[in-house]
Length: 260
Image (cartoon, rainbow, N blue to C red; front, side):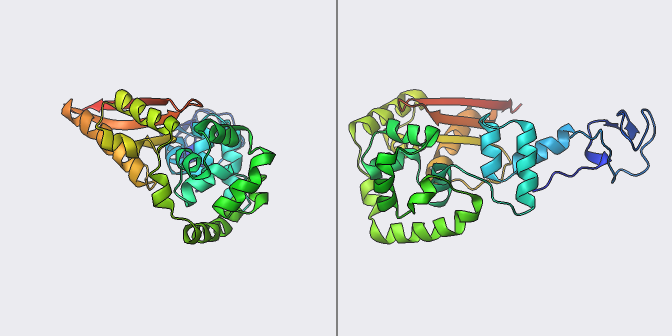
């Protein structure tokens, strides 16, 4: 995914008339070649929307979570297009490659959700790195720094982990904090307990209609459940933000389009 810097994607292109003050066209001049750009180029809304929806998840998600600003978002996209390594949070990489959320990891590692939340937010405590490394079959150094160039190695780690662990059996465990979470999901979403048990595995999801990201089973279930509820009210689900705070309390925000 690259940002296409051309007159056709510039916010100062008003129906083929330049409204900028760059070094290519004068203000008010007709644009005869929209494949070039100038030093006053700035991304237009349509192109920004396309980029924001289709950027790689490891760049898009930090931007959506307000962890990086737009100039950084743009620089990372350019660096990624050049094949440079992009630094990434190890637990976000585990969520995508292992398919394990912070909730799953807390159960597997026999710690509370708060421990995992802090590990993702401020870094894995030194006293826990060795244990996390051994259980997940991930090199210690990845917990200190990981980049997109390490994805292939992490996939090999996943294969080794799945060979050495009965993951599905362990994930059926529901310590007190997780049982409380399941009940909170029932109360927040007004869904049956069997759905809540699966949805409770999600620790964060930022979903938009027509974005091509593959969803895991838990995420699909959440989106489908909210979508069906919306359709009963003659609405179409446009976006959904779901997250757990450090106390493992669920928060959800949705936007809809009236289907009239």
